Amino acid sequence: MSYDPYGFDPGLTYGSQETVGQFTARTFLWMVLGLAVTFGVAVGSWFTGFTFWSLSAIPWIHVIALVATLAISLTMATRIERMRVGTAIACFVVFSVLFGFTLSMYLLLFDLATMVLVFAATAVYFAVLAAYGWFTKRDLSGLRPILMSGLIFLIVYGLLSLFILRLSMFDTAVCVVGIAVFLGFTAYDTQKIRAMYQYYSGFPEMLAKASIFSALQLYLDFLNLFLYLLRFIGNRKN
Image (cartoon, rainbow, N blue to C red; front, side):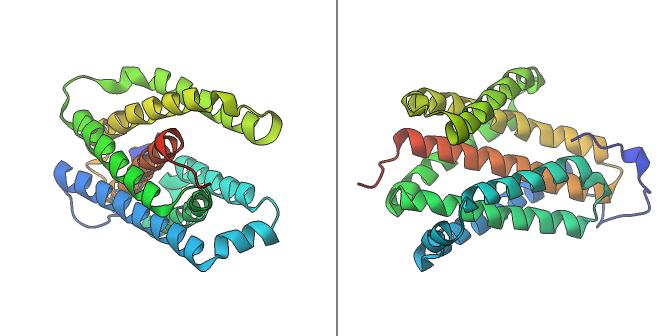
C-alpha cells in the first residue's frame, strides 16, 4: 500500500488521534472480526447444504468466488486511499463473506474436527510470528523480495494446477513452501503496522483506512497459513 498522505485534506478526520498501541489493537480486532465472519459463513454454508447445492447448480462457482475476492483485494490495494472509511469496511466484510464460501468447500474434503485442530495450530504459529515481528529490533523489510518470490511461485503453481496440469505429486513440497512464506509474511506485516502508524499519524482518517488494509493483509496471512497447514497435516474424509 503506497498512500500519499499529503494528497488528503487533514481536516477530514475519523475519530481522535490514537496511540500506536490503539492502532495496532484496532488492526488485530478487524482481523479477528474478519476471521469470525469467514468461519461463520463457512460453517453455515456447509451445515445448511448451500455449498453442495451451489457447486451443483452453478458451474465454476468456486472460480467465480475466487476471482471476486481477488478483485476486491486489488481494489482495496490500489484504491483504498480514495475510499471512504465506510466503503473500506464494506469491502473488507464482503471479502470475508466470499472467502467464507470458498472455505466452506474444504468442509466437503476435511471433517470439522480436523479443521478446528488445524485452526488452533495456525493460531499458535501466527501468534508466535506476529509477536516476533512486533518485538524484534531487526528490520524485516529485507525479507520482502524473498516472500514476494515465494508468493508468485505459489500463485503460478495454483493456476497451473487448477487450469492446466495435474501437479498433485508436488503438493506436499508446495505446502511446506506456503507455510514458510506466510509465516514470514505474518512477521513482516506485523512489523509494518508500526511503520503505517508512523507514516499516517497526522491523518486520522488515513489511519482508519490503513488499519483496515493492514487487517486484510494479516487476515490473508492467517487464512493462507491455515489452508497450507490443513493440506499438509489434515486428514481428508474417506
